[in-house]
View 1: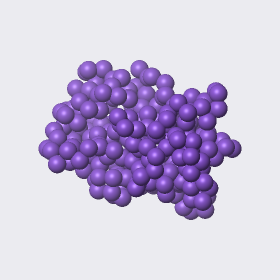
View 2 (view 1 turned 180 degrees about the vertical axis):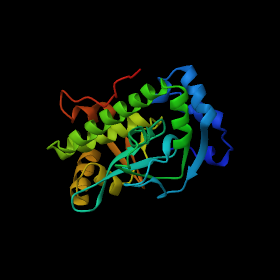
View 3 (view 1 turned 90 degrees about the vertical axis):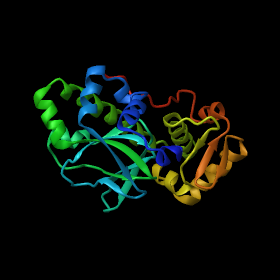
Length: 246
């Protein structure tokens, strides 16, 4: 979760793109690619709960998360949405439908007050026609996002509730590391992300707290012993690192 200073200060597009170039997919792109994106990008701010786009929408662009957090959800067979990812700064989304000229398969909402860099659909199509090589860059983003999705959905099937929660907390911490180990995530949202009922989740969190792995706060959780938390996930457990793309 971003520092409030980002919202009170007047962050420029150049500063936002510089932040995005520090990690993830955008950091792996060439200087020439980042320069072309800077020429067509714009800054946007979303309030908590506001959608960037919804399931079934026509593609409206690609978004890079500069500050705040995003919730990505997919429809379930019972008609309700399932939030499967809480994205932190450095995350990009919106590529799949745009590159496929198809409707959105997921909904994306601002989880907090959020700043994004947006690349509009028309501008991106014009860029791709002028510079066909950029299509490969966006397919690299699609590959990275699918790798993350497969990892998240596979972990929901882990039988041990304790391991499931521990892995999710460690992944969230890895996405947005803070010196004191705080993760800005409510217990309600965490329960949804790991597909556990609140009573089950609270029992798991109490056990992890009793093991001195966690500290619980209002709307946030602090990892106090990362090594011990990882050990509870099994000897072969690994955190998600999307394969580098080029």
